[in-house]
Length: 450
Image (cartoon, rainbow, N blue to C red):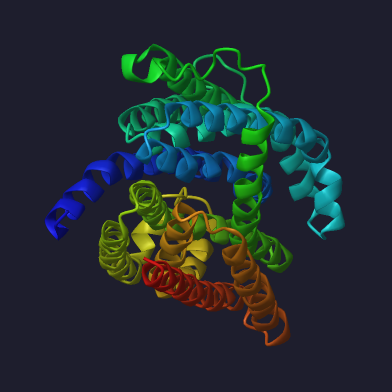
């Protein structure tokens, strides 16, 4: 396929996937905006709670994400039975993981107090978490179905299902957080109920599409779902746990930064939550491109097409680098309007958050290229079914270097929240260099072997 064909194929598959990621981000941003309007203390509590929730979610979603490269390769080989086996066991592992996780999330307040968080923030966070944890089940199942549909190059309903969920979440938040339309004013509990309802709606939409769409119904994903397939279970688990731990290392870097900001103060934690949401917007676009890279690399691997594999990876890289430069400029040139989207300007604390957030957005601009490169090449390596060595590299880059640098710069050298974010820049830059070099080494070895 010529380069023009790779460009067209990347956009055709990528735009719906990116759109779905942005719609999913809209759910989190809506929660942040509306809780921010409700109160700064509530925003700090929900920021911390969702950071912790996301850590556990991302570990479990490693199994769901393992479905994507495995289904892509099986589809490239024309093996429909393997598609069904992998998807079903992805659903199985996700349910088992959720059952094991529930007792931990139920005791969120005790966990936060052990980590040195303020009692008020921990108590409000537990109010949120004891409801929100029930959304983990549909969220995990949604991730499996999204991985399967994307790998089969059917991302359009992934997009529409997520858009429906985002609209429902905005409505639920508005009604339940503030008590509109005769509903009780539930504050953070309302945000949690909205999240559970949203993820349940998205799951029902995607499950109905998978079952009723003619070309997909032949896979009979939900038929005899109770029957185990232990070889496929083991295959998904073997590929999925390093993905989960790799994502834990990355997300843990950001969630640990939230904990550090909480140690610094409520203003710092609330501002961190806003700037993270802004930076996550660009990351979701990079993640969408990374998903495309996994699918196209996985399919090329199934066809044994080395040249097509290289061009698929390079096309995604070119697009990611261009977008990274664009987002860096936006963060540098328009920090205040971006931050004010999340605040009620009439509240006294808003001016301090805007002032503090400007500096954090400068640092967010610095890591755009590195953040995009590391996630794209992590997913390219997953398309090649290489997960264990990238996991080790990620742990070293994010934790041994990134977290250590954040703590040292913030608390030992006295740079505070800016030091925390400088550590993020250092960890992500090291991770991106490692992942790119790992891909080049694997590709050269594979081509040398023919």
